[in-house]
Length: 158
Image (tube, rainbow, N blue to C red; front, side, top):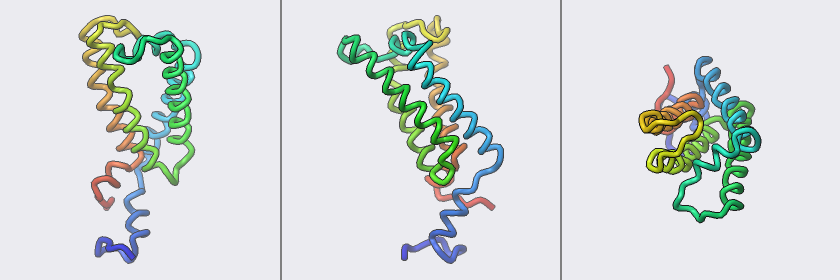
């Protein structure tokens, strides 16, 4: 058996303690999941062109590829959103996966800022610049609301 913290009899007890989240975290986990589902639906339907505008310009300029990226990221957002809501036993893993997703799509936000692309009401350099910092908030939100921060840093709840 793996070595665990002295206050726990087993590693499983320690894991269960670390995975506990506060009801406020649960609320924000579900809210983030719902927002992800909504954004994913937007990728597939009413915001498809705006999401296409965010695909970084350093990728090949192929409309089919750009559309594929938008559609597949929309499906992934819906999947991650539903996982945030319903896969409670795996919420830490889902939170980490969502945080990684936010990091992976960050180049699209940088491209929007650098290339001065108007989308989603971000029609000034200031608004596009502020949006870059919001991505950090999303990463933190995904990790905090799922208990992944506690898990990653090994902190026990008291």
